[in-house]
Amino acid sequence: MKNAAKPQGCTNLKLRQLTRMVTRHYDYHVSETGLKNTQYALLSHVVRLGPIRPGELAKRMHMDASTLTRNMQPLVAHGWLQIGAGSDARSRLVEATEAGRAKQTEGQRAWKAAQLALNERLGIARVAALHELLDACIECLDDDPQSSAEDNAESVDSCNRSRRSRR
Image (cartoon, rainbow, N blue to C red; front, top):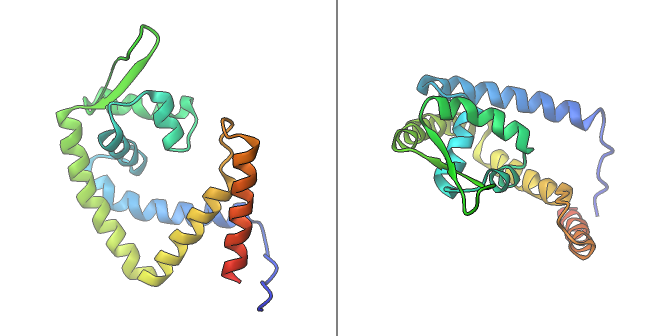
């Protein structure tokens, strides 16, 4: 069995550096549509999941509610999203408008060009391995407060099994 090398440096710093570089890459392509990469992601989630309650959308996107609200404002102002009444007086639903669906389709073409260019630059195998590693890390770090202690124990066991299988 091969021993894993001890990590060098700060994981947070390395992830943030990579994230900034990848974000610039996608922003370069997606900006042609008048969207920021974050706006495209939000719009795509609403198109796929909507109509949806803002709290559920924030949870699905792994972001806090205040950030979601702030990020939705320009999309609502452009007429790409609408926020309507939910099932009771206190709830709301977010939904994409027809113009929003058209903008998401336009953004998707630009996103696809960005994805293909990144795949070409990094190599398909490296991108697939990165996705697998990121998904496993997200699963291990998911700290959903509604999860029971039993679910968290199962998740830790799953992460430990996953780590052992990669050695």
